[in-house]
Amino acid sequence: MQKTGILELPLHTGKAPRWLFEKMVILARCIAQVIIIEFGRDCFLKRLADPLWFQAFGCVLGFDWHSSGLTTTTCAALKEAFYSLGEYKVFICGGKGRTSRKTPSQIGEIGQNLGKNLDNLVYISRLVAKVDNNALQDGFELYHHTFVFTDELKWTVIQQGMSSDSLGWARRYHWHSEKLQSFIKKPHTGISSDKFFLTLNLVDDNIQKAQNVITELSWRKKEENIKDFLLLYNNINKLPQRHRLLLSDINPKFLDKIFLKTYEKKPTNFENLLSLEGVGKKTLRALALISELIYGTNLSYFDPARYSFAHGGKDGYPYKINLARYQSTIDILKKAIQQAKIERSDRIKALRRLYRFYYLNDKEGGI
Image (cartoon, rainbow, N blue to C red; front, top):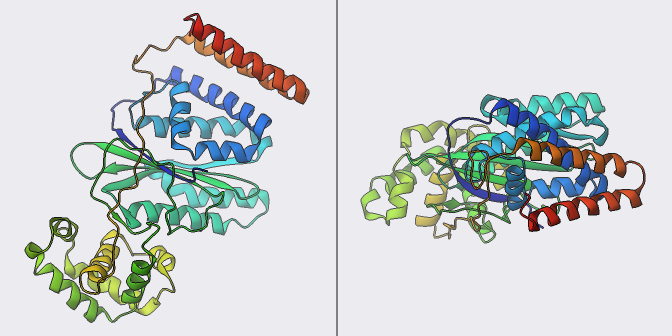
């Protein structure tokens, strides 16, 4: 099971034209309905959590195969599609930029409508963002966060970050609640990327000892941690290159207040430390380097990106959008959905006809 994933994509300018986005919403709605009717909501969440399936899904909708916009536009189309699919009890919150910061309040509103306390989902939404932004330090800052869940409180998260360098890359992260045993022990599997970056991976599966030492260091008086950090900072040119890079943008004077806070709070474990307000990537990096270089714990510099792939999209590669065929696809799926609501045997036949339609047309060069 692919619980999470990462995909690197170049940032493209522009956006989907309105006529295409409206079609994307309709087609996304149809595909989601077919999957949920045939296989169930859990399967739908599972597929969204697979970065390869999600990429193919976005390309089927007609977006650029090699663009960061596929993530934001596909998620936006799904969110709008589910406004009219309330019967399935699948809820989509968040989005791009400022909309992503509305995720907690949107989850809360849905909880009120369901008559359920969804504070735990709010906590999860915030924690997965902190893991990918702070505990997996790969050079990307999150700017997109979409949280998908059901009334049974099963969930999937799709979020994307922008590279801090001038090359303009984006990286997408997927999460899924199924079989997820820990937020801080190798939560990412099924990860896709074309490039690798210098990464401080504080959620690798062989780093629990370092996590424990980092947590214990956060309990110390701030003066002790500042003293050890300055020992590293003042000898930066004597350290291996990767450590010089990791230390270069941390100003010791900004660590004073946060070390005081962690000393006063004394987090019980690494997840608790990570979830503390104000504890960001530089705090964790400082504690990690103190842990490794002074106390001998082994850190992980493994970038978990694994797969790369390519498809087609709206800019005409490998072909231009054919509106008539696009509408034909929608019509066929709508008929399959209506048939599916009548009887299961008819549903299966409808999906088989859909498969044969595409298979034969593809063989004949019709699609």
